[in-house]
Image 1: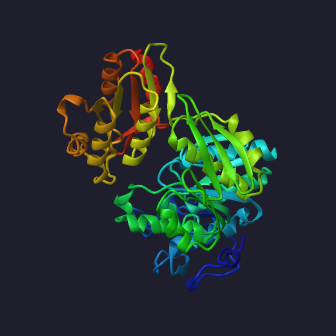
Image 2: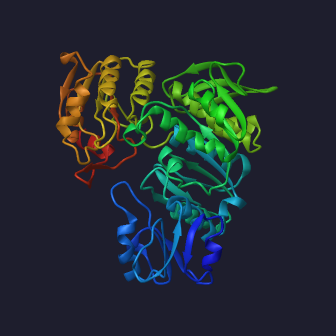
Image 3: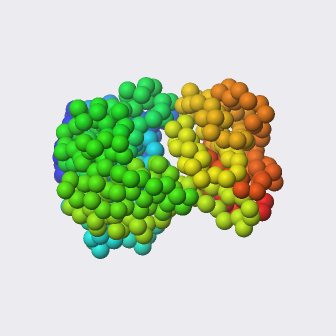
Length: 477
């Protein structure tokens, strides 16, 4: 593709290159550059892409995109904003695939992953088509499934994935959209048919600084999609509605003014069901995942499906055969008289949700094994401790992903929010902590392993070590 075609929609300061130059590939990682490629120098969290221009040129980059002049003996284009430029260039290079697709983006603090899988399931079963998925757990393109490195990839990878979907004949896709991706313009050139908002609770303040910035970042999605689906029971929805540029559809478990309302909700140890009341239509909905949060995830998925023309009854019918998501209220078979449940809950709100769910059917004690991630928002740590202590019968405070922080320092922050010393034990080694909980389990206990969920590793000092809690549980059993 010619350089001039790649630069369509890009706000340039100066073009010091031949617009007719043929570009073989687009890269934002100097280690991946191939001869004849275009390298975009973008500043990251810990490193500045500008510093790697030399390596990109050595690897064969023929043109460099940057926000300031570079002296690397190569053609260059100076742009106002490298992140926005990367998004537009990536979309142009891959032929703007989402303009020929129906893409649903899901954002919010909790529930994105489950809602994404449920929505995909409804689309495939109702329309009889293949639906792609880009999410926290994995990326699915037809029969190809691969592990995801982060919730939302960078612009180049995103557009490449959509191109691959479209080339495979897949015209529907569901995507988890993080606040980071929205604020950093990773999805600026993705055409979203529908944006879905689940909820907003404290998280990622290490990046956003304030809850206001966190919410503003989430709101960006609803300035770029055609239709918005919002949780009317979350106060943040009011802000989004006031600032959105799309048609709005709402769902609720409390407010009859919403477009889709859950009435006569029933909770069971293995499922929830409710009457889904739409405008001039009603049907019974059932989801085989327990808990109040499952009602909201189901409402979000049904609403998303309805926003693209799927009838309510088709959506609820598809939902009845949907099952749980790995690491989300996942029951680990033990063959014993106690239960082990793995859940990704890593925020105070998510931990409260899963614990309240367990409280609804627990016959014995609830023993919670949990920690907090390092290099992340420290203010939520004592809140996590307080929530766990309040809603559990006993807590085993341990490590999550300490990353570059001292595990004990993280634990100290958690314990600062706890008051009952007789209701907890501190075991920094997570494997030992899980073993302690299992070895001391009583009949009818529920052991909750919170925080890791789908993850099969533990990150310590920048190194990911294999750690699958399912394997750990089996080894102790």
